[in-house]
Each structure stands twice: as C-alpha cells, then as structure tokens.
Image 1 (tube, rainbow, N blue to C red):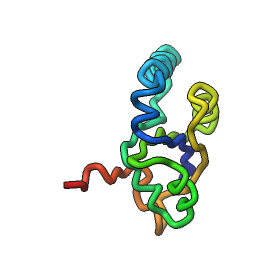
Image 2 (image 1 turned 90 degrees about the vertical axis):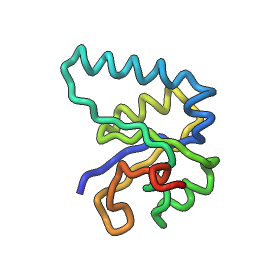
Image 3 (image 1 turned 30 degrees about the horizontal axis):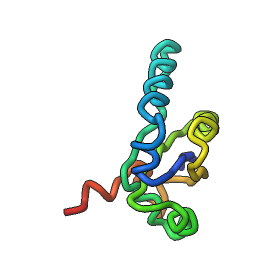
Image 4 (image 1 turned 180 degrees about the horizontal axis):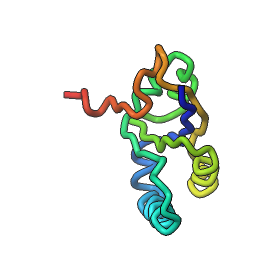
Length: 110
C-alpha cells in the first residue's frame, strides 16, 4: 500500500476563490526545472472521501468537493500554507474501502 496525502475543499472554493491555477502552475514549473516526476493530482468529487474512515472529513467539506492528492507529504503541507482553508490528511490505498486513490465520483455521475 501507498500513503497518499490530500488537501480537500469545496470545488468552488478551491477552483474559483483561490489562486489555485497559479499555485499549481508554479509547482508544475518547479517540478519541470528539477526534472522531478509529477506526484500530485487534482480530483473533482474524490471517491476516497466516501470511505467510512474519512466520513468526518467529508462532513466538514462542502460538496461538491475537490482534492489535490499526492504521495509527497511536504507538497500537501506547502499547499495548505498557500491555500489556508483546506482540510488535509492522509490515507493508505489501495485498500478495501479505497480501492483507487485517484478515483472520481464525477466520472460516474449522469
């Protein structure tokens, strides 16, 4: 199993109220300059929030939610400092309750 770290918030807050695109573009450029492989993903309506162990996080996060998921804990800490009003935490996957750490409920919505 792999440990994944996340920063979650409402989609509206994360993608419209915060300078999210600027922050992610800055980080992407930094990774390219360092020749580092990307280790973070933006997920709209992340399925991992449906796991019973994350019910308290989901309850505090206005829906529909969005999350940045990474295998790099330092990046999520950096993101939390930049964006401030996001919920952060970690989970391990794949597991019985989180089979795909990057799955989105948005792809299955009609």
